[in-house]
Amino acid sequence: MKVLIVEDETRLAEAVAQILRRQNIDVDLAFDGEAGLYDALSGVYDVILLDILMPKKDGITVLKELRAEGVFTPVILLTALGEVEDRVKGLDAGADDYLPKPFKSEELVARIKAVTRRRGEFRLEDLLAFGDIELNPLSLVLACNGRSYALTQKESRLLEYLIENKDIRLSADAIIEKVWGYDSDAEDGNVQAYISFLRKKLAGLGSAVKIGNMRGSGYMLEYE
Image (cartoon, rainbow, N blue to C red; front, top):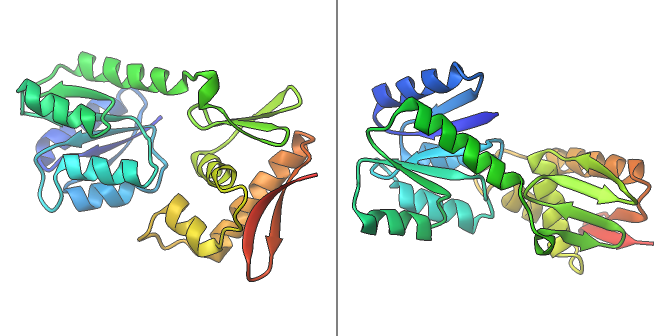
């Protein structure tokens, strides 16, 4: 499991990181809202612990921008604000849970485990389908013909974007902005690599779905 802590109180952030690392959880730290948003847009994290009152960008703004960019990584808000109004504001912005400071380490770990369990739950209507494949963007599972593969988060986000725009040929630039983030250093080669990964997994499942590529035009799902 990989967790991002976005917290401007450095001593608290380091203390929480130590707690999680004792649980064999991989942890990255960001100490302001802008840095936290940049890291979170990478899509590599399983959970984000997000403070509300921070410099450069407050936590609610970061959360809204993440959700607007299609990043649905579970977010637990960490804040000294204890009023019901503040909790509602955070949850309305897309937070998965809310933990007021101070908190006990046992409760923090339990809530992280709870939101990651919920992330794996899905309903039939959560599935995305095209041709003979089904994608569960919550559990990151691609299924076809009774077989399945676990995708990486980037692979899942890329395939989800292709399915949602199945009638549109998507340029590499559009894919980079949506999947990697508007301020990413990703290039066409990154897109080509992940398209290749998905093609191999589709072939491994025996799917008739292909990812077509017309030079200078972009990528589009095809079903034979």
